[in-house]
Structures are given as C-alpha cells and as structure tokens.
Length: 271
Image 1 (cartoon, rainbow, N blue to C red):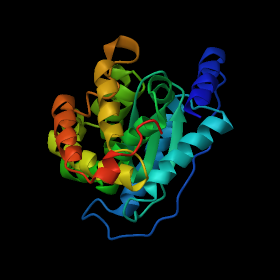
Image 2 (cartoon, rainbow, N blue to C red):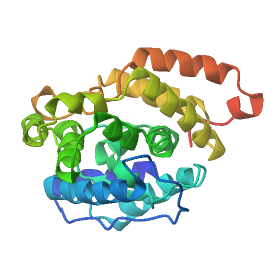
Image 3 (tube, rainbow, N blue to C red):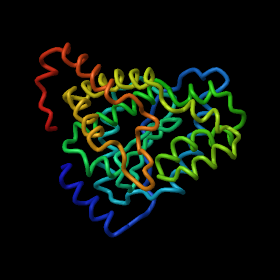
Image 4 (cartoon, one colour):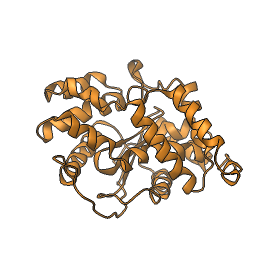
C-alpha cells in the first residue's frame, strides 16, 4: 500500500494538481479548560491556524492518499486519552520529511514523509509521536506559559515557529512573530528535550497499542537522522528546529524498547 501511495504522490508532485483537502474529524469527549488558556481559546486558535496553513501551503487532492493518511492517524488516535476536540488531518503536498501537531488536535503530514519512509510502521511512529504532543497538550501549555495576549498574538507566535519551518519560509514566520510582538516568546514553542521525551514515551505506547512494532519509532528517527531532517528551500530544517535531541532520543527509546515484552519485540517491522 505504501508503495502505491508513493507512486500516486510522485504523480501529484510532478503534475502539481493542487486543491484543498477536506479535513477529517474524530469525535471526542470534553475535559476541563486549561487555566486562563481554555479549550474554547485553543479551539479558536486551532481553527485560525488551520486556515492559515491551508492558505500558505498546497494540500494533496487524492482520495486514496488522503484516506490512507487519515485512517492511519485515526487508527493511532483511537488509543490516546479522550480529547476536548476532534482530531483533524491534512496532507501537505511538499517533499519535506515532516509532520506536526497544531493547537486543538490539527495534525498535518507532509507527502515527503510517505515518499522517503520505507514502511507504514515508520510513518505510524511519527504520527504516534505527534499525537503524543496532542494528548499531552504541549502546544496549548506553551502558549499559555508564554503569556501572549490576544488571539492575534497567539496565532503569530505559533505561526512564527510552525509555519516558518513548515512552509520553508522562515522570513514569513519571523514576520508573523514580530508582527504579534512575540518574537521573544516564540522560542518557547520549540519543544524542549523533556517535552520530546514525554511525546516519545506516550507515542511509543500509542504505537504498540495500535499493533505496530516498537522498533518502528527508532527506525523512523534513524531515517530522519540520515536525511539530516533537512528538506526544502533555503536550508530551513523541516523538523529539527522544533524537535531537538535526536541522538539522545534514539538512545533512550532503544533502551526502553529492549525492556519490553518479547511479544512486542517479535512483531514484524515491515508493516
């Protein structure tokens, strides 16, 4: 299936058939608001950010690719704790090897992630990591801690980090952050090593609960390391700028996996 999708994606990238993709949602239960930055605020921020991404980047318009990625994300999302918002998936038509989670459960996947990875399980591993950020509310907590006032300021701060790297347009991201007077605070959104460890640990559980080999996460990170996580224009890292510590992460994940039950370790990695 992954090989077929690569063929479809290569055709799309060559022909530049670009139309907005229809996002997909997953019902979820509500939970208590986060202090001063509540669920309502996050939902509004997420909708604005989603619209901004879709205005700046082309989305894949192929039912097979959209359906495959959506189903893969939802397969893993079925194992995360209940969230106060839907999980919404978009597939960006870009050869960067990347995926990212935005506020309010928006998950964006680069087409390059499918093109450059070998197995579905490796794509699933990256999705599981990003859903770890969603489940642990990492973006919303960092927005709140930055104490940026107003929706425009919050949107500018998030876009200054995510869209600067995601759209391979660092000057656009910087302008958004500066325009919201949050250039200083925007650095707070870059995930720390502790936050990455949390998302890795949670994601590893989601990955294995979904039936995949735990080693797929290590293999995925090894591929990203080999590619140096640099895909795109102007030398802007697609992932490294907001997801640090790749060597350390491969090390502690390998150690954690080594202590897992044999029935998990014996799962095939070729899925």
